[in-house]
Length: 131
Image 1 (cartoon, rainbow, N blue to C red):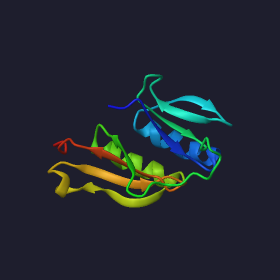
Image 2: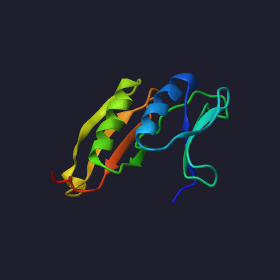
Image 3: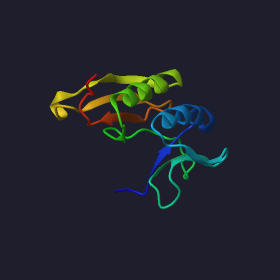
Image 4: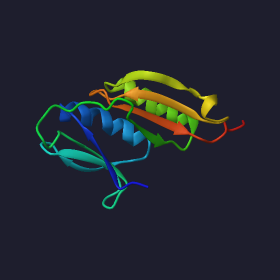
């Protein structure tokens, strides 16, 4: 569906410290780092991957109202770990892990903001595993 998404940051070091553990939980290793240029997680070109950089126009990075990046999680436990990693590494809560029944009977998601205020979520569409 997409090749890459670009996320703007005003503090690359802080944002890389946030995204490294969050993306690791989701199984997307960092594949590029240039501390003055940015970082990338996911698969090499043609992707898909997430890129992090300061804006090319040299103006401050800002968040998009109504814009959110959603990451597919393989399990509900992965959604939980995504949320925990985000909060432990400078992110803020936008909605704890749980079912969102208005999106479907097994839509399990958590919502966070990264250190620059970008809204992210992780979602698992699988029904809960029976023990």
